[in-house]
Amino acid sequence: MGWILKFVDSSIGKKFVMAVTGLSLILFLIIHLAGNLTLYISEEAFNSYVSTIDIIKPLIRVAEVILALFFIFHIYNGFRLWYENRKAKSSKYKVNVSSKNSTIYSRTMIISGSIVFIFLILHLSTMWYAFNFGEHGENHSYYKIVLDWFSNPVYSMFYVFAMVLLGFHLNHGFQSAFQTFGWTHKKYTPFIEKLGTLYAIVMAVAFASIPIYFLFFFGGK
Ligand code: HEM
Image (cartoon, rainbow, N blue to C red):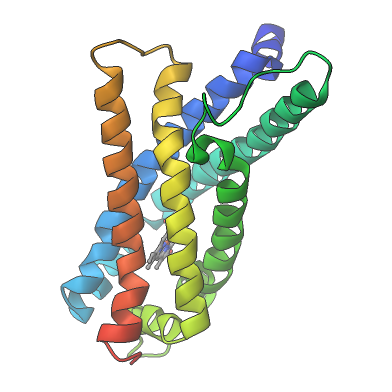
């Protein structure tokens, strides 16, 4: 047991935890987006998707606890790695992390990650809370809860802004996880990088399109 804790606390261990939790969150986002896209089909389609999921609620609750732990580990480790890098940079043994050998995406991971974290707190305390603990009358509709939140322009615009930064974060995070696992190859790495960028763009655009759709094309209501 001791060696696991030692590994998790080492520099490579922290990166490993970031990669495992990061890749799991990447998978979660694909599933989450697929469910949310039923909002585009119809009110009934979205409501019946949520009601179907309700049938396996105990399973969802277990998945949510695992997901929450993964988010917590990911964020906690991210801050520790960021702090260690900062300390290393300001020490006399300067590490060369200039713009020549890093990208804007890798240099802003702490900023993009922090904004996505603020988004997550807002998202869970509004939409997730309303879905799970809100007062639901007889003819209530989950679709209307989403519609009500996205009728607020400030709320919707913050979502769009956060999704752009989510895209930044995923763009670097995706390929960085592969690097941590040592899955690098002259032939395949450029493909992984392109796949990561494609994934980041699809996630950011698709998630951001939902509040834009409700606010502008749906007239707010
Ligand atoms: C327009 C974009 C989004 C919409 C409309 C949306 C909608 C929702 C809804 C309705 C729920 C409650 C589901 C339920 O309890 O049955 C939920 C939960 C959740 N959302 Fe989102 N979401 C969006 C984007 C995101 C993004 C980008 C993330 C992560 C960065 C995220 C993370 C979560 C998490 C962790 C939960 C709790 C777990 C769950 O219940 O599935 N969401 N979201």
